[in-house]
Amino acid sequence: MTFTPHGKHLIAGEWVGGAATFTSAPAHGPAHDFALGSVDLVNRACDAAEEAFWTYGYSSRAERAAFLDAIADEIEARAEAITQIGTQETGLPEARLNGERGRTTGQLRLFADHIRKGAYLDHRVDAALPDRQPAPRPEIVMLQRPIGPVAVFGASNFPLAFSTAGGDTAAALAAGCPVVVKGHSAHPGTGEIIAEAIHAAIAKTGMPKGVFSLIQGGNRQVGEALVQHPFIKAVGFTGSLAGGRALFDLCAARPEPIPFFGELGSVNPMFMLPGAMAARAEALGTGWAGSLTMGAGQFCTNPGIAVVLDGKDADTFVAATKAALEKVAPQTMLTDGIAKAYNDGQARFVASNAVNSVLETESTGRAVSPNLFETTADAFLNDHGLSQEVFGPLGLVVRVGSVEAMRELARGFEGQLTSTMHMDSSDLAAAQGLLPILERKSGRVLVNGFPTGVEVVDSMVHGGPYPASTNFGATSVGTLSIRRFLRPVSYQNLPQDLLPEDARG
Ligand code: NAP
Image (cartoon, rainbow, N blue to C red):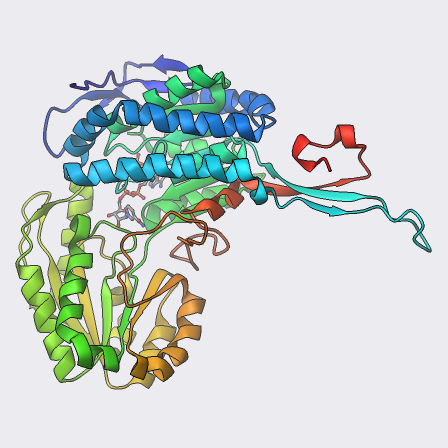
């Protein structure tokens, strides 16, 4: 089955074209024209979302769960076409697109189950105390309620799992919030076919049409207008620090500020403790190279920095990493812009006096190869740029003189999505010294693993202190992410029949 995009936006149940268009830039296959987003479309989508909230926000959990399951079914029904357009637009391999589709439908079904169970409502009841002295206490009931329409920015690096029907959309719809998606211009056709699946699920389950709209990108004003629209009550975003910060600032400057849940990236440091290095430096180097180059390094959890104790084991580790990286064939990056940002980052390292090149490669167009550099603790601490993310397969080894110096270095890191320790039982004391620092810096702390590969489960935290995310109290992966789109309401002294259904005793 060949999918040819029609290039239209989906605004509250209608496919809307326009005279102004942009042309997609696929990694391979034909380019297509797509209608350009506009402020007018943002207004129409947000008005419809607000209108839909008055029914969708008060729908039952069972109805919303059936809707989420229907979206998953409709995505599966288009599996082959999704993989076809997705691989063309992003250059990601077929197996990755298939896996990501499974993750996307899995997330939708996980949220369906999550809301059916109802524990997320955090329903609390403080019974009335009519005889309390000196004054009686009324009954107080608390429940988490949906916040209203939510804006979602599709991510370039996850065309399915963090885009049109990705984690942010699934969490918002599960909570009871209509969603307006600003599609990423790197994969507009993939966005369109997923919007078709949601459109079909809306028809199948009788949901209000304004519950979902997709506005294709191509125009900065779309994102700006969307986050500033008075009906939008929160934003989910995955992307660059610069873009995320600009949109976050717009949200804060609104007459009614709203939360901006931005997931902005990380260097995800790994601390290689001496016992583990003595036992398996070579395997650790090979393992790191695999994680660093997975998906051309285009993961927010890519471990870009390894901190090691200087010495023989560090030499073995660096040599093994280099040998494994040399075997990796050039990989296609998601967009020309991302490839350019990677090459600029590499050039910054090459030009720096603070690092030595271990493996320096040339890139051609969107096809890039891994790079590896090393530096010392002093040089690293003196050059803030070395601790900044280079999105792609670029690794930096920091050699330190002692475990104490490792702790010192850890204290210097900004907020991270993840931090990792590789350790053996002999490293326990060193790990105990590092843990309080890593925990303070990161959303997720790992031992003896690599942070790429984020499980979508109840206990997952994919977030962390700024700049890893703009809200350290939130996660954008896992069922806890629904909390971003809920707010607690207390109902004091309401008769049972007036309480929301979920709050009745
Ligand atoms: P991006 O430039 O931040 O763009 C993400 C989305 O935000 C796009 O829809 C973009 O719209 C919009 N946007 C960005 N800046 C904006 C602004 N000032 N005003 C209004 N809208 C704005 O991210 P990207 O395109 O995905 O990739 C660029 C870089 O982001 C990469 O090189 C990488 O460094 C980083 N990145 C990080 C992660 C991560 O996981 N943390 C993921 C992907 C990318 P337009 O497309 O219309 O400009």
